[in-house]
Image 1: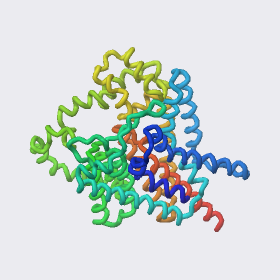
Image 2: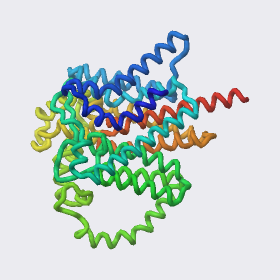
Image 3: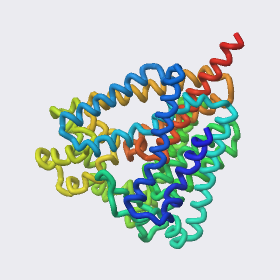
Image 4: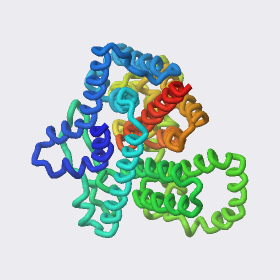
Length: 442
């Protein structure tokens, strides 16, 4: 477990630590794979130890493991059929599935309640640390942003180029902490919000005060997708605690307050600043979005949904699909085609459909649904505050990942996916430990 503690605390600080190492770009990009290497190595060593000692490797259960294996097989098959680049396909599959291994690692480690609570404190400390760095950046302005920004990388590894928004020194000071870009910082704070809301549901003012502080930091990132997801997370938590019927009635009461805002919208919406949150309510934003993520939904989605490739997809090698667009989808605006390589995963659910087809997308959806069903059952059966807290956190993060992946690739962003699957593993492991202890008593 100590290595898991270190990874959980190190991940948010990784870009800042690696920035100062005197190594070349290739070495730097390889060092960024250290966390993944540790996760894969831990899984392999723990699994081998169990095999050699005659013990079985614990599984998630509820068809989840079978669905995961079928998904990997389908991904390999579509890569083979589409003659995809092997390195790019493996890298893309790895980016989606790598931290699911944390579930199996935690199940094999079988942590105690004390170890779990200690790990949660380490994660909370990491969130607080990022808030402090964010405050330092906000107060320090451009100089602090320069210090905290990730390394400017121009090289590639296996055809993949790293791109950090934190090294784009524009006329803004969007918060990104030490995480290299604003989106990763914002998504990590979503983990912090889930921890806070679950821990202080009965705290009244403390519940709202903590959310407001974390939400303010997210708002200052300028990431519209994470801002909307944070509000969605709050609504879901409120609905789960107090019922969605009560939530609906509360929202209806806000309609009279919203009407005056409609009349003032002309003055409230900043049409000049493209970085402002209110800019999404302008026609100019719609046109810009049509040239990016919205264009994928409008121009590309309907065309490929009925194509012969729609069953198994075009493979995890995105360049196979981009070549197909160039050759066959001539109705797609050229401006969208030119940037498709960079925006294809901005609507991640569509990207999963493009990569793995209807079959792969349905299998992945069933995997997530079975995970959710298992967590919901554990939450109902929980007999301790720790298990209730863990299951509630995982359910919140799993639910918020649905809209988040319509606006970004949350399953690939390490600052989100690492903690989603880590906390999921902690939930399953502690439930089994609690159940085992209860069976021994009986």
